Length: 581
Ligand code: NOJ
Ligand code: MG
Image 1 (spheres, rainbow, N blue to C red):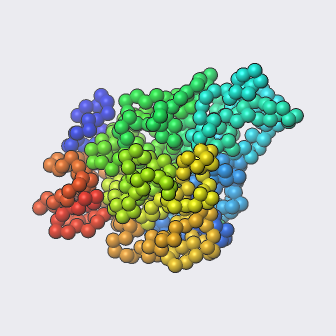
Image 2: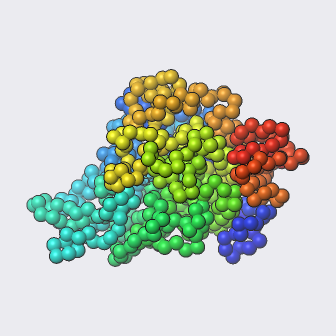
């Protein structure tokens, strides 16, 4: 690991312009990989039922290899009643018939490996589905039984146990507790669910639960997966005694309490909710690390942990824990050069202190797509679901322009980047979904107060003019696709100069050629505060995030890539350029 800083006593100063910052070293593939997130139900549908599936993925893998990514991560495709789009797992070691079979998975994995793509699957250890055999057995078993101890059952308060055990509120809205009914029909104990009522939390203090999940890891490792994205990796352990807690008013929905004081900038010491980021989670990941170590080929664990500040998140990627953690502080940063500089500095520093690479991410299946989010108002930076009635809806052209510029910054940074399916097409959020088409539990649990995440989950367009834009062989699509998506279709953009798809391809190929993922960035002095300027090896990156056009230096090298056309050496507003240094 190399971290050269003027001051290593804490997070770096935001205005430092010329320090050298290098990423943790090592030759493992994940340190610099670009990982493409496939949301299986919306990627490609082979059988025309309107839901994407594993054979659909296999049939379209070539296009990802052409795009130039190193790995794919698949959101859950396991057996599930789909109350939270598969993040409610009823069987961790089988494929839901909606998506295919285990044989289809093996075929997909083999094809991906043939194409040189690593494959990461999603592990959802914090909770199961209420359809899981373990939960059914827990409900059928008496209070105090070993079966009940696998989950978080508690007696209610009040004379007849009619009051929930504490005041915690679910991430999706409403109480975090549900009362059960005993087999004889009388009201029973309550169980904890951080998310939907159909997602009971497991009791991770129970060694039996730990053993079972290690068996799940081994099942997929033995099948040949290259790693796991670990869902809610900050939630498994709850504070002893389950004390009441009221999150601050501005708490983000996924983080539920650990939001930065200033968006995109690390807060000093946000409160730790009793259900997030408890110290006890770390020994679990150490044990998983040991399991992965038994397998050859640099397998990876990536934490989905909405934890701030970044110096705290870095604990998830200490050398004996996970390899990566999603950098949501970066995702949440406003479209502002000072904020981006600071979060980039802080990220590389914080992860570097434990020898881990930083990761970068702008979109995923839980947040408003960055082609819309970056043109939203400052009060909704995380993009907490937008719909027809959201005030200040984004301008589509401005959003896309900023998204292209933002991506061109991200893909020049050292470390590992995540791309969410459809962003390479410049897809915006689908804002005008009819109310009766929405499926996110957030929409239902808040009675329509929060639109939720359906807008970023609409099946993606492959071929213009085809039913479902070539998503599947029929017009069927589990969420309706907007009528004006022909222009975003992959076939229209392929080989079209200036298209977003071609911009991504070029960025990925230059990134590989110049080994930017393993590089070192140096901030370049002499630019306005509103301009990001850094070099990464042989590439100079300049991004104009201000409000006036900027003249590129006379001695600037050849343009390698530009997110918008560079006319007469002028870098227009909301444009990023890569120059040969
Ligand atoms: C995070 C996942 O990304 C999200 O989609 C899901 O709803 C929650 N975890 C609960 O599993
Ligand atoms: Mg299908």
